[in-house]
Length: 469
Image (cartoon, rainbow, N blue to C red):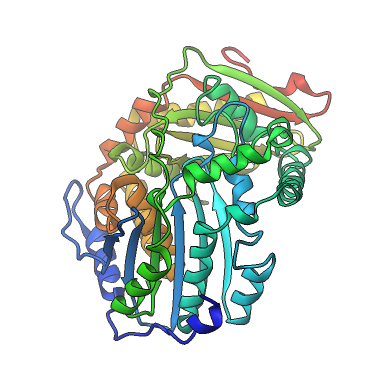
C-alpha cells in the first residue's frame, strides 16, 4: 500500500502515561534497605505474537505527540561463521538500500518529509532498526519497516552489495585501521577468546571476509535471519492500541515465516589458562593500557555487582583510580572501567591513557594495587551508595525518551522473554550490599586476564609486562 494512503490512518489515543511508575520505581529502588527486594509498579507494556512469529510489543504514553518504532532482529556478529564475518553489520547498511515498493533513497526522504528520523545499530547479539516521528507518521514508518522485512530480496543485486561493501570497508578504515587506538578492541577480543568463538571478532568483520562476501551468501543470510519469527517490533509513544495492532497485522501479518532458526551459539564460559600481556604499536602519541577479564553475563546478579565495581574503581571523578591517577599523581589523563554486559558472557575492562612522560609499568602497578584493595576490603558504605544510586538513576533516566524505552523493551525481551523487566532489573541493584562488591571483585578480577599496551611506533619496550616490571 502506498504511504500516501497509509498516512490517513493516523494513530492517536487517550492518555495512559508511565511517568509516575518510573518515578515511583526510582524512589523505591534508591530508598530500599540493603539486601531488600522492592515491589515496583509495572510499566504499561503488552506483547502480542502474530501467527508468523513476529513479536509485537506495545507501550502507550501520550505525554507528547511522538512515537518510536523499534525493530529488533535476533542476529548479530556472534551468529556469523568464521570466514563470513561482518554480515550482520553489512545488512544494517543494505536494509537502507530500498525494497520492492520503496526505491533507493526514499526510505529517508519520505520519513524526513513527515518529520521523522531513523537509523540502525549492530552488535554481537542483535541488529536494530528504528524510527522516531510525529504520531501521525506512524503508519508510514510501519509500512517502510514491513516492506524491507518482507520485500527486500527482489531488489537485492550485485551493485547494491558492492556499493555497501565499500561503504563498510571505508567505515572499517576510518574507525579501526586508521583510527588511533582503533585496533585495540579487535586485538583484545582475539586474545581473550579462542578462535571461532562468537565474540572473537569485531562486529564490523574483517577486510578479507567483506571482500569475499558473495551475493548468494548475503541473500542466504537474509533468508535465514531477517524473518518475522526472528524479530520483535516495539511501538512506543502516542498511539491507539487497537488501531496500531490492526495496522501491524495488516502490514506484517502476511509476511511468511522464515525457516526454523538455527540454534544460536552457546559456547561454555571462557576461562583463560594464563594472563596474556600484549603490545600493539600504533600511530599514537601516548601509551594506553587496557585490562580485560571475562565476567558475568547480562542481567545476572553478578552483572549488577560488577557495574558497581566499575563505578567504584573508575567511573566518574570520585572513583578511586580517577582520584589517584588523574588528580593526585597526574600520571594518567583519563581512566575508565566498565562491565560490558552481553548475552553469552561479558567483559570487565579498565582502560587508561598515560600523560606524557608517565611510565606505563608504574601506572599499571597502581591499578593492580587498587584492584587488590577492592578485592580484599570491598567498598565503603559511601562508595556503595554513590555507585548504586548513580547507576539506578541513570538506568531510569534512560527510560525518559520513547526510543530509549523501546530499545530497553526489545533488549529485555530478547534476554528474558519479558519486555517489562525494568522492575526486576532495578531490583538486582536494590538487593546488593557492599559485601557483594567485594565478592564480585574477588570472583572475577582475580581470574586470568588480557592486558594490552598500545604504544607509539618503535616503543614496544614501554609495554606492561606480567610479574616483576
